[in-house]
Length: 268
Length: 256
Image (tube, rainbow over all chains, first blue to last red):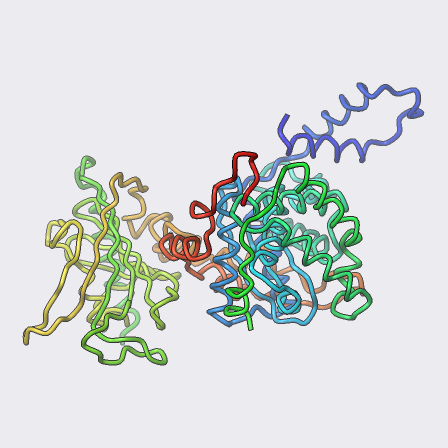
């Protein structure tokens, strides 16, 4: 069973109404019902995913201005494409950009539109940390976290065919997806993106400890204004770091390059 | 400029090019990339004269099935970052520039006033490529000085949709890379995907409450036009010891 199917079934499982006392309902029955619900959710094609993602990306760019620093944007794209090159989604193009805000955050809109804030770049110390953050966001795109949530939305329940995803329906889905990103994805989605980010960064040749190092540094700045939204929308840093460390040990991930100097040369 | 006449002429020319679609189905497809340099070096957005240096000025991706052809032209203003693609579609020596609203004959478009762009029409009347199939091509001015130097790389297995060569077809206006243009080349359509989906969003929910937003679709178009070529990425990987240049794991499976 693919990860996407598993995710859809588990998501649908959570949505199931308790038709009878849980104790009286076998796991098999619940799984069967969940699979049935998952099948009824209309899939969203890559083309529609990109259209929705473009709208969400435009909304993000409407809240925070996108940097026009060409050299910085190019560098962030090079790092992003390095980790994306080991990620298994050849059907989309990845685009990376910097948002001019002191807030510390990063966003991944469906279809490959990925943003990191200037505030986050100031807290990052090396290219391996940047790679870890961008790989985490790339993980959100590849696991279709926002799209899977959109599929469960009330708007999508009225949609019978891909072709209906246009005009007002598209606007509503973009609005829903934008709210999801700004309000935060589920704890499960964030932890899964951590795992995928760790995997991508290590496979690309970066020090896999980069993402954990950045998250640890965030905890030293807890309570500061620019981190308010981040803390409100992500799992606790210590929990994430513990989990990343455990995965690294289990998978024997170590070494890789840090490239602190190259980061400092490119991000000022 | 007489807009009505220009539009009519462009329409006739585009129709003429579209008629070329009836050309032999077995026309040999070819696909190649020209990387174009001129003598000099980039200084503050301009190429300054310098005899012992070359400045990268543009990259052109060609798609050809004689007599029809297509050139996707990306220019640079700093020698490093390529801008968005301008699309030129032609039949033999005739060429039109494909825009979001329609087609304009190259000689009437602002691009046609650029000698470097005019030099991109490297086809004879039958639409066959003139010049070498690949390698280094040096073009000299009448006085013997070097005009431009082209590094041409031919694709081994050209595989593209023939509709790309037709300025009247919906796909004809699309760049092979994402360009943000959904339907161009026929004068009836000017829809742009970039605006889709964000028109209805004027506020978003955040942990701090609802905040107003004004979606910026052009920022996303610019984001999509940031170009990082395969060679630049490979150079980046090599310099950092990443990707295929990363150190292999040791005998215990650990990365050193």
